[in-house]
Amino acid sequence: MSGLILVSHNYSQHSTLSALYDAILSRRGGLWISWNGKCEAIAPETPRTLAFRHGTKFDTLTFPLTQEEAEAGYHGYVHQGLWPVFHQRPDLARFTSQSRRHYQKINEAYARAISEYAMPDDQLWIQDYHLIPCVKLLREAGLLNRTAFFFHQPFPSGQGFEAIPDWQWLAESLLCCDLIGFQTLQDRNNFLLWIESEYRTERLSATSVRVHGRIIATGVFPVGIDLEDVEYLKESNSCRLTEQQCRDTLPEHTVLSGGHLDSSAGLPYRLSAMEVLLRAHPEHEGSIRLLQLASPAAGHLPRAREVTQDLESLCGEMNGAHGLFGWYPVSCLTHTYSREEQAGIYRASRVALVTPLMAGMSLMAKMYVALQDRANPGVLILSQFAGASEHMDGAIIVNPYDPDAIADAIHTALRLPLKERQHRHARLMKGISRLDCHWWADSMIASLSDTEGDPFRAATESSLYAAAPNGRIRY
Image (tube, helix red, strand yellow):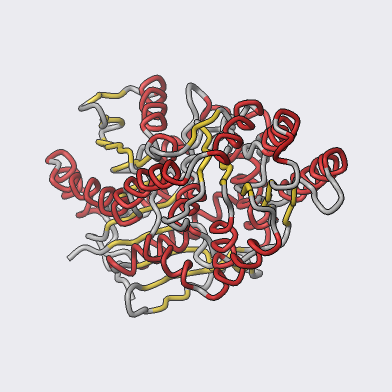
């Protein structure tokens, strides 16, 4: 019986996404392959240590990176290069030959780990643009396993992908996939239109193409959250204590602001919106505060430090201009909070302002809604350019570049009667419950399994397996 191998960039990271992987594998079983979050010195030509752990619900296989790989490959190539390109800001992208070399080494480490532990009938589910080159490396190693690749980030429109220097080596790896998943319909369309403009393709259906003799299926699989995890967070002592502390110390109308600390966050527009709000509606003075979560862990070094410093400067200017004795309109919290503590902050916030300029999904928006008290829920204000806006019926959708629209949305949210807030929350929860993390995994793995019966693929693989290396044994 085939198993599932989930491959992600950081097993040790305590994030909502890591919690989703844990929940999925706890239910389905399988093997989770990932960087362990640690950096070690590794001598050239020396295989890095692979640490396998047999768990009660699923197994894990982790390994370290070198300091150079983490800094140049992970924070350099991925965060300073790929991140801006995929978020429609190629002008901010910084690529170097050194960062590409270490990005390649990271993917070689992943390919080796997968190759040593994958059985021929295992299904591979590779997560996000950190690991694009890994797919081709696996094919070159002789692995023919059905392989799905999922983009958590938005896929750039037009020829935006080609802003990456030597983009062809990444594209050729994507063309080795059996299934590529996207967060939104727009992302999938961007990919298909682009791939057809650059390669000789045969469109087999609305969602699949044949390129270089391989059939590649595509699909839209918006990432959901784990509602069992939400219930655990709600019931935790840290959540309850933090929620009560917030309610005791913060103004009645707390507007939560968070997200990644980078150029795609749209933070200056949110602060401008608060200024517009206070000028247009001075009645909010003394009873409202924008609570900006600005932990460095929410950003990508070294850019996170710069963004945090700029944010603190802007907050200081605004508090100086609009603050009163005993009250100020903005709090910038640079402390790193646990997931349980964040849940308490979410529950105590009357409004969540989730307005990135561009985002693949924005799990913060879903977590905020799910953590609310159904009897007295807060209101979600969501960017029209966040992937979540496609299916979060009940949110107030705004243009994140328009401070006036954001200010008006905040004012509206604060004035909504209880019944309207409950109605909006119920609509949002209906979608969140239907499209949870298990729906996401089940849908994508089912779509990957559908490729198994393709006669062209079966004939191709039967001949290639004969030539492939034998003896790959897991454990």
